[in-house]
Image (tube, rainbow over all chains, first blue to last red; front, side, top):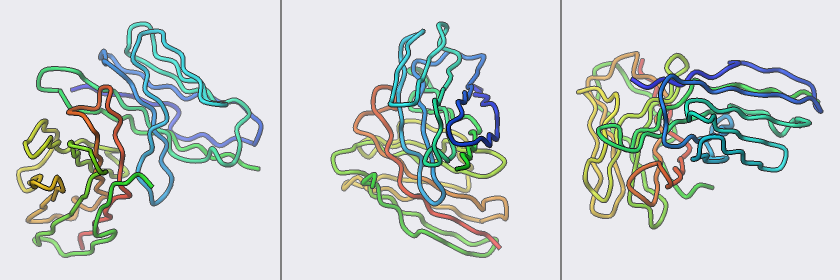
Length: 114
Length: 115
């Protein structure tokens, strides 16, 4: 069974601070996705990283895929209250009986205080 | 708005009962996925259908079943309900046959409460 461990589980910070969320596994994934979920809504895809060592930027958010494609990180610069939400990483398996399965981490609940 | 429609939004039922959750995928998407989200288990993959056929299976209980119809909408049937089945059930859709290279678009979920 593939598992993704996210840390920290909870993060409460002040507006303007920087933060990093980690997503780790002992398994190799063909790609890794990051989602953000707000209360009462479904997860919304932020980014997909595919290549080991890949770095993608989305405004103040920087996503990195580990060289071995087993881990990923999400870094937010100068966090704003609008960044508040549940952040989920999800690893995709490409073949065999695991095809179609997206394994989600437990999530990080981020609260940014004004 | 993701374009994925799930009904109903809320469902309250008693143990032992059977319910059906419905999902309409985004226009043009051929894959439908069902996920269960609970506080202790997080988001768990249940099952995927692609163009009417079962494509991948996750941790779906035998009491649960799903299908995708010719018009591509999908239904998730939950029977002999137990208290532990209380959770948020999400449907997602994608254009391709798998999440690799084909982003998932999630609906807003059905909150099931079993009393």
